[in-house]
Image (cartoon, rainbow, N blue to C red; front, top):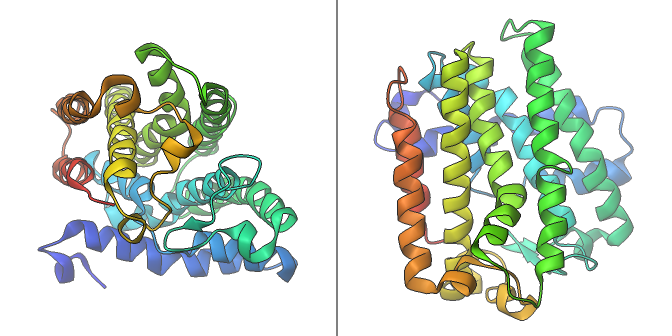
Length: 300
């Protein structure tokens, strides 16, 4: 399907591209993987979702002069990382969630050992996906290595894993605004920032544009987390596709908990505005602005 079929809803077009590409990519990546592992991976990755991180990579690729459709396979790499993070985040030893994206969580369906192994396997699959996507884009080995370095840094101890550790340590105690930001920079914002920066790198964007998009992603990532915290208070389980109110049950460090609900709402708007300032001067920033506004207005 072409972009013309989604002229009134570019975001739906991006989502369609990702959803149409993921099954075939998984066929390649999982060709020699035992079915006992491949099946839970497919369950996690192909679950319906907003695909925000791959959308940002594709839109950033377009913003710096590329054709968004050409970056779809590269964009799937960040969705693999995000899906892995959700699998491990939901485990009984972490947040112990039983519902994700409107379906039972992976460990509920396949058991905890399978969920641990599937999550662990999805990170190297994401790196493989970068390699598979680099050739058709004409990227050099240096550019491909740069993309892998950004992706793995955002996923590791200085990114999602480190943020998850800080999140667990903060449960049940008061945290400062600076500590809250540090938690959510690692847990959420760094992968969102990497997604946007990777799009620019893959498109051959200038260092200035890559840096702008990384800052855009960091601010948007913090806004996304603030909105997520707000929705956990306001949304229903049916609306969110996961059990609502879990932040309160687990005594998580959240934007409403630290700042109060009105201030958390104000901060989310301010962060999105600050993110969009970074788009000034990019060749084609329109779709990134649409995605940022969509994130601010989302209800699930």
